[in-house]
Image: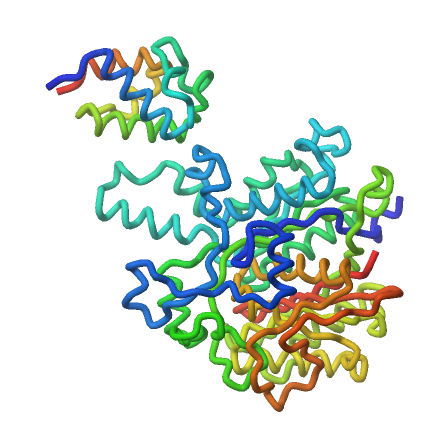
Amino acid sequence: MAATQEEIVAGLAEIVNEIAGIPVEDVQTGKSFTDDLDVDSLSMVEVVVAAEERFDVKIPDDDVKNLKTVGDATDYILKHQS
Amino acid sequence: MNATNRTVVVTGIGATTPLGGDSASTWEALLAGRSGASTLDQDWAAELPVRIAAQAAVDPAEVLPKPQARKLDRSAQFALIAAREAWADAGFTAKAGEDPAVDPDRLGAVIASGIGGVTTLLGQYDVLKEKGVRRVSPHTVPMLMPNGPSANVGLDVNARAGVHTPVSACASGSEAIGYAIEMIRTGRADIVVAGGTEAAIHPLPIAAFGNMMAMSKSNDDPKGASRPFDTARNGFVLGEGAGVIVLESAEHAAKRGAKVYAEAVGQGISADSHDIVQPEPSGNGIAHALQNLLDNSDLDPAEIVHVNAHATSTPQGDLAELKALRKVFGDDVDHMAVSATKSMTGHLLGGAGGIETVASILALYHRVAPPTINVENLDPEVDADIVVGEARKLPAEGRIAALNDSFGFGGHNVVLAFRSA
């Protein structure tokens, strides 16, 4: 069953918390991964791989660069999840 | 400024070892003669011929913030913890630049490891096989590269004069400190954070060292297994951890009123060119390094009262070192209290030179030599004054000096000399 937008944001918050140590409540749709959430370029790859597993979605490397904010990633997953 | 022969001093020390999570607890355990070795009770150890090691007393992943720890190989975690202790001990309150006492352009870092991020490399190969390509961590390369600990320490203190990683197996830590002394002596830097680290307690290195017959297989007696200079010595016990010091030009240290532990007198270096792993048995290669130290420093053999021996507890190596001391120093060896602290810490490979430099400096500073434990029957071929069983006071007055010897597979010989402040 496909995840809702709310579930995706909550899931990403847990992933970012695990990888970058940011409190889950600070991970909101308007936040930039690199500028606001301490996710560097290598850690972003970890976020993507964790999100792929959690939401059963494929995020090609070429698309990763467009995922600047938590909202970008949420929209992408909503659209592409199977 | 005489840019080619500046005096170098030690202004900070840090360590995390099988005996304690910092230099103070490590030193206390060394003086008390405690062994850091224990049985490996992990599942992976069950089938190994060697099931003992000297594991870190404090898990570094529990000390560092989790997001930072997960991006660092265990060897870099140890190095960072020891470096932060040394940095704070030197009296700095923030990284270079933020603390105005340190100019980043005049600060270096030289941290060595013998093997590098071996547990990361092997662990990620397991991930590749078991979970597939996509799951291999994007942090793998910066974690496994041997210069990772040095680079991470350099980043942490904001070192811009140069960050280096000499690799010479078990001599690596001492070679790093020698390199750092030269950086300051020749004027390239005013301060260098230097030391050695290692984290190789993993089934593959243990199986490999075990098959070389280099390790003790005294699985029933982990605390008695590392016994340098004893007739029953049968190989080294693998240890892990890091030892790091802050080296500084005497002028820079004086200007900021820093506490000075000791003077870093200099280093002697040579290569055996004898065998890829066997030490040159006559001690000639090591003697060459000791002579090199005397030729390139103002060290006087009469002032040397303590030697932290490399002595790993192998039948051949322990004696070759003592032969070399006698060859070069003659009767002066008789006033040198020789300690083999690997009897307590195990052998930290590239980390050995780091923690043994810390031990040598503290021995001078407190004027006491740590013991060599587990010597029940001193090898009759030992021709030196080994500090057996209990710590021994060094001369309470006057200028005294100590040596820290480190030798590595490949025939690398490094000798460091320190003098009381």
